[in-house]
Length: 616
Image 1 (cartoon, rainbow, N blue to C red):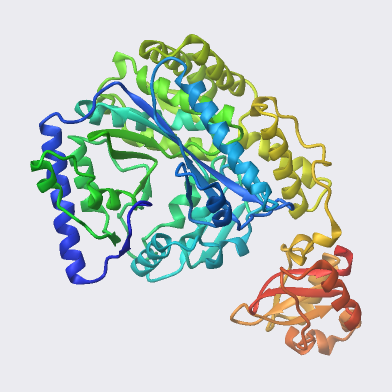
Image 2 (image 1 turned 30 degrees about the horizontal axis):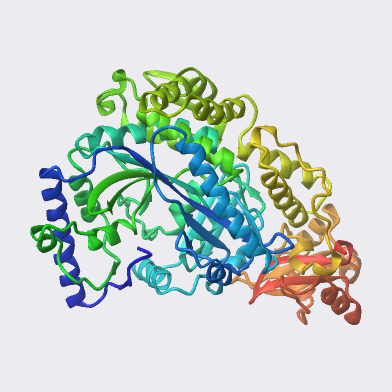
């Protein structure tokens, strides 16, 4: 979609022209498949590296456009948010030391990005979800100012006609409303591409689906979102909900999410796969078309299938089928979108090699996998892996088997056989697959992040712990230690500067509140039981309307008349509040000047926390 000048599909004449082009694209695809025009070999691999940018305090750095302009290299491209960028690596023929060569290129381009980012006091971090991303970083001002992102956001909002709902439950829980697709920008991945034989499309694609769960389980790297422990690979749930066009209703909704694993094994050709996507998903965008695909085909040229590519670009299968053209010859490839960015480039290349090796090394007993495995087991395996990572168990070959045993006893040997059969050098295969083996026997990225965060929280506030966590990840990535060898943070990887702190870094978000019509006796008892000195009071709209301070009301516990009233008769309504972005220094001066010991922290009229004198 990035190479096309897109616009929202609203006018009837645009819709008519777009549908005409889309149908001609599918007709041209069928014709090319029928005529055997597709490249079937040699097989190529490729990858896309998404990465995060942080400032010197390890918060998201909105300098992506400036850095991209200075890099001035077509291998780099923008992403949805101003704190992410992407590298598109050139494809390599799947043979010899292709993985180590791809690895060298990846490190080369990342070094360029690091050098240019440093000029803007920014750093490059590889991780599935940047732990320090917070709700202010998900406002529209952080969206990359390109028309395609604006148009896509508007199109999806128009279909929903309602705010997006984000609800992810793991060890902790996140439950938020948001009004844009920017939560998708939290996700960064290492998208791996494998060219496939169109004649074997259905069986190859189904095999990619079957192995997705076990492969993901050892590669998870994003257990945190806004300081909450959620899934081992939270990206899966977050991406699904962040661009979901389905609004909640009282009617059972059978429609498929635009981000999905799928609902069944695929059947037929690649053209049938794309037809199904056209049937299931509404087209959102269009572009200017110069010439139709069938005319180009009749003139002996290979069409780009722009309408079909545009439609496919708004459907986010975890295993996405991609069409491309190189040197005038079309090809098909599977894009693996579930592998996260990080923890290191060594880990990423190892993840990619494991996936490619298992794809190539499929044994005969798993041919026609759709006849030997229930699709819902494959789908269940995928979501079990996303939730539980290395702790997942899988339905595999009519057995229930844990991640460790399935990977060690079946998939790793399968990957070795596949790589050797295609001509990958033993040195390359053994180097990268040994990284996977070491990880299976120790820890993957998500487990390290979880353990590190829990350790830091014992000594630091959550906001500080997250910054030290990201600083540690950056330090380890720079040394190219694979994650199986990472030690937990010492705590001195980043020294918190008081002058840089804001209210959001010190406020308490787990605040006990009361409603203005609650019993005064109950609220005062709650404050007494929990030793709470400040209790914000909310009205029926859940807006902040008052505050109780213990010094003002402790004597009311002895006054039976007062206890019989509602809390609205005791609370203070002349409120002095602050915002989460206020500097800690300014907040402290505000409290001192008004001789108060607490400040409710608000966004508009909504309470999002409280900061007290003890928090300084």
